[in-house]
Amino acid sequence: MSRESSAIGQQWSGIRFQRFRTESDESKRQLFIRTNRNDLLRTIFALRNTVMRDRLMTPDKLKHIYGPVFSRRLGHSLGIDLVPFKTCTYDCIYCQLGRTTNKTIELKEYVNVDDVFNELKHLLSTRSDIDYISLAGSGEPTLNNQVGKLIDKILEITDIPIAVLTNGSLLWMDEVKQALMKTDLVLPSLDAGAESLFKYVNRPHKGISFKSMVDGIVDFSHSFPGEVRLEVLLLDGVTGIQSEVKKIDVIAKRIQPSLIQLNTASRPPVEKFALRMSNDQLHELSRYFTDSVEVISDNEETVLPASSDRVVTQDEILALLQRRPCTLQGISSGLNFHKLEILKLLEQMDHQGLVKVVRKDGSTFYEFSNK
Ligand code: SF4
Image 1 (tube, protein in one colour):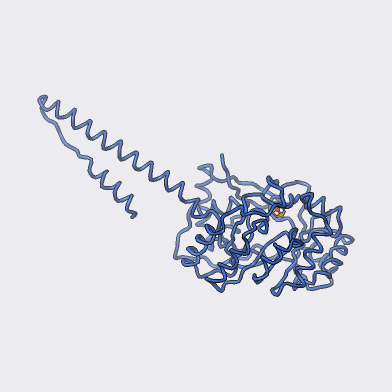
Image 2: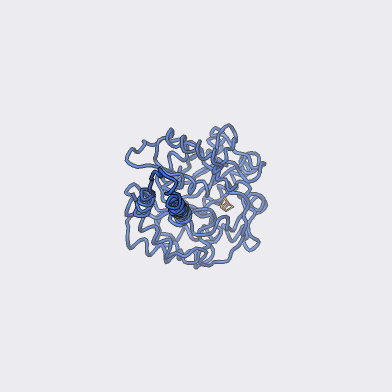
């Protein structure tokens, strides 16, 4: 029990109960009632303040770090959010996070990296099951101009590999390219093979041309000592057709990644016309890539063993859902906790209005609700 809650317990137990048998005791009785009522009010206020303080403190604990999330690409990865929600260079039609609210190419310290580092250090002291530390989150992480400083600090305290999930749009900037050089794995995206579909699918900031984006990824890939995996997200009827895939392959050959990972819109996309593809369609199109390729949406439903030595809190679930909608399986895998236990919490949270249930393409997703 925390020091605060034990203090509250003493206040509750300090409320006295007494019988008053005669009328001459009336003044004593009135005094006693007033005293007791004041004790009771003080106790209620203390309890309310403790609950409110806990509510206010909890998001701070989880402000920049989330997970570990079981990602299709990285196993158990501890995610680091380096920009505010939907601060991005793109506004992709398939984005699962909604429309970009701050479309920018301005590099700055959107999030204080010393705060991020302190959170990370604390988390790493409590977890031993992390496969990757991932710079990712709810926008484009390379927009944070202190990302290189954070990487240096992480390297001082752990050997856990560092991955960067980036849309690749800023790798033509020398400052961004240099900042990522000491990481282990960079996963840029390439969703189109020509300018027109790039603009249609990714809706980039006007300061980013298709050529600068592609040249930046190619140049980075050739000078980066670590591993580059290229993520290609295909949409049915748009980029998920043979002629477009062949154009993407021409650019992929210039990039020379260790692996091409084919993906599709897998959660409710921001635009209804961003249609997901079936695994069969992705496998069929994977034949048009020259280099090593895998379809990763197959692995989404991998079940992990449940852990029995800890409890999951509503706050941990909310921290995940504030970044993206998840299926029950996704939450269970991300928090490494049994689905039935998660389901119980989700049902409570649904009743409390903390989450929304959305059905999409035959799957049920849970979304953060800020009603
Ligand atoms: S999918 Fe990624 S790159 Fe595209 S808008 Fe969303 S956060 Fe930005």
